[in-house]
Image (cartoon, rainbow, N blue to C red; front, side, top):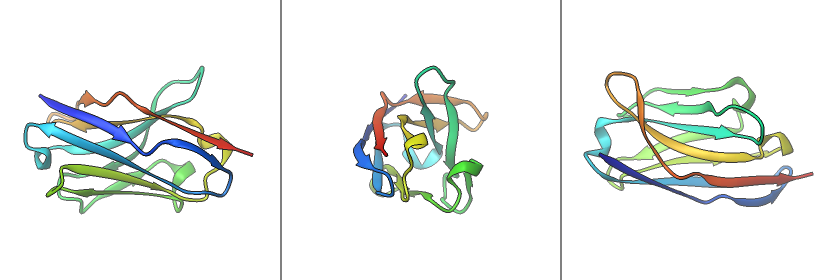
Length: 118
């Protein structure tokens, strides 16, 4: 079992930045690849960024490439999402999730709200 707690969300103006953090506890954090998802009202939740357990490979959905950066610190059991040049369409609840070796995002945080005003 892995417990995940997100923080760092809030209200920001367009063009601004936020850094989300996701602190993990429970089983060995470094065993898991990690992902950040987001869900806007009335829309489905989808993967925004992903990082392997070692941090040597990352993935970004097209709409955030060049603006968002995912990173992790296994010594601190934390994964981050640095979000720059935020736009109103980035407004959503952001969730972090831990992916097992079977490829399933099994463990989820409670989410943190990000609101970008125009």
